[in-house]
Image (cartoon, rainbow, N blue to C red; front, side):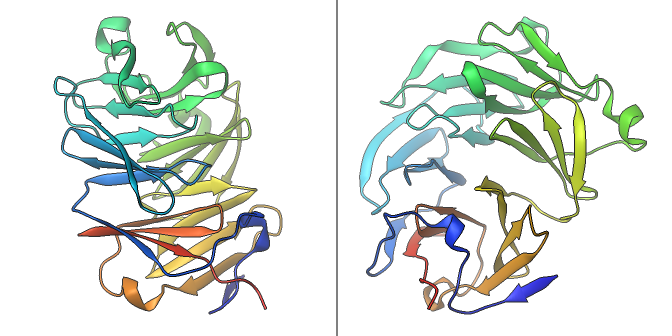
Length: 267
């Protein structure tokens, strides 16, 4: 069931720090961005990563010159983002100054030659999607295996083509645009598929999946199985590359800026 509303939003996505006021604008053409649960913005432009607070104020800036083109940023741990370059097979965890912590990890040299997706997990561990093995692998900080899903093509009776993944509340969510969002536990055991297809990106918060589709910000409730959607505000007309929700704000990635706007309260 899909419900479309103009001035309401599920209260479970809001916190006691609901903000009021006009939208904040982060000017610039960014390749990608993400947010953490504190509402900070991590925006990538080339090899330069910049950190903004939830009012859009620039906080820190740094670059990883020898890292290769960054495709994914994971802010699972606030102020300790992970960056990943699948082309180079390189991964790094940054500290609260956006400097590389502990050195750059070369995955092919560490026995993972075809990792195409990576994200953070609890206890400073990582999840990898190994395209050669067609498996999800969870490893610790020293890349020692903790869990393995086994071949997903045999488990699911189709060959998945995932584009992104993230862990939340000890569940891994793997986005396959053709099939939906596949859910696994920390042991790599397949649990279910959430029937949301055609996504390029998504965010999991408070038992809800937030995503941008059909020019609407949409929220899928994993308990009621309902989708709530609402039109974007006026200042975001035109192309929107992605959207996230944190601490009562919606973050919208436009071609030339990131818009941070308070979500309207329910009447």
